[in-house]
Image (cartoon, rainbow, N blue to C red; front, top):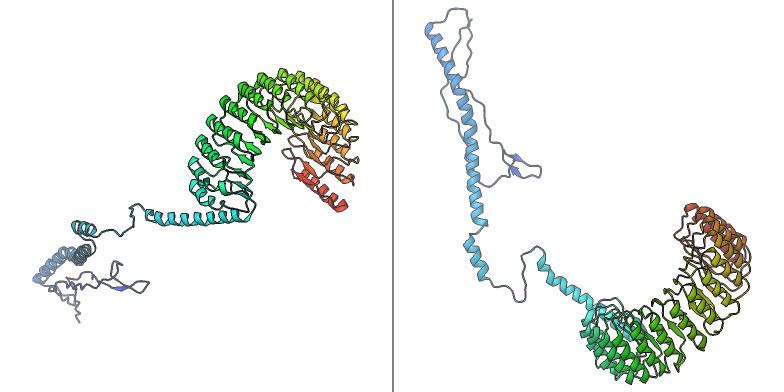
Length: 600
């Protein structure tokens, strides 16, 4: 029995315009784009007539006409199928892109106005009053930020003003409030009955800011100390200040260090000193005062009888300035301290200065002439003054170049002097010969309590001579021997001296190459009862753990140890050496309740 089958000759793949939902619940189209409220008409494919060929289920031969129709239908379907597939894909895609283009143009017209319309609208709208606009990102916030900073600054200035009205000593240095801040704060000084010492140092104050004191300092009788150091007020600022202080009878100490004061400013100060009767201390360190300024100040010293301390360190006086100053000192009766460190006065200048001091009618107690290029020749003149003075207590010759010969001149003078208690001869190229002469002078001198001979290459021989004398002689309480090249051998002499000496409280042995051997020698002396030594400085000595172990054992062994400060910084200690020293410190505290400050 024959069976028939129907074959569609116009079949093609189906293209579905599918809509769905995204993960967030919103509708999306077939491309995954968000659905828009636009109606898209469906695309209906063209209907074509389909040919159907009936096949006979039996095995009889087919007619020729039937076979020809079948072949023609097969060839037609093979050509039409690709065309139909392409059309079924292209038509929906083209429709989608057309709709998308129309929507884009519509959005562009609605949201982006035309250039001419935007320009006219911007021009027609006037900016708000007082508002400043900027087109850089974030710059519109600058006005608000500036207001905030100004508000915070005013709050701080108010706090400073409260301090001025509440405390007798007020330090406002380094606050950088400038001229405007000083104008604000100066109001708190008028008729102030509390503040006696005020520091406005390093605040960016200029000559303009000094005008803030006008009308304020004239009516203030409580303020005793005014510090304006580190402010570039210059000569103009000093002139303005001096004009104000003419009518002030309260300030006793005026500090104008590092204020760019030159000869003109020094001249203004000199004129003030001629009439002012309250100023006791005047500091003009590290300025630009030359010979002319020194001459002006010297003239003021002849007329002023109240100034006590004059500080002129780090200026440019030179030999001529020292000579001029010496003439002023001859007629002055009030000066007690003269600081001339770092003025390059040389031998000629120191000769003139010593001559003037010899005729000085007052009682000078402190003389600082360090770092002034003084040689052995100049030391001879200094020695001559030392022999004559009956009032000098403190002498500084630090960082000159007097050598062994100059040290001999000073030593001879010290044999006759019975007033100097502190002498600084550090950094003067003194060797064993020079320090031996100084040691001899100490045999019969019980007045000197502070001796600085550091930064001199005295070596083991020099420290041996000094140690032999200090075993049973002298009254030295502070001995400075740092950077003296004494080595481990010199440490032996120091250690032996400490067993017998009963006066040395502070011993400085920094940077002497002691190493473990020298540290061990000192440790043996620390085991012996020493009721005087309280501070020992062994920094920069290449000491390692073995030296630290020796010192720690010595501290534990001496129950009556008096050392309260031990410096071992800048050595080669590991955690083991540090731990040993820490244990020794704790042991001493547990046994005697004495605290030792150990610095690694």
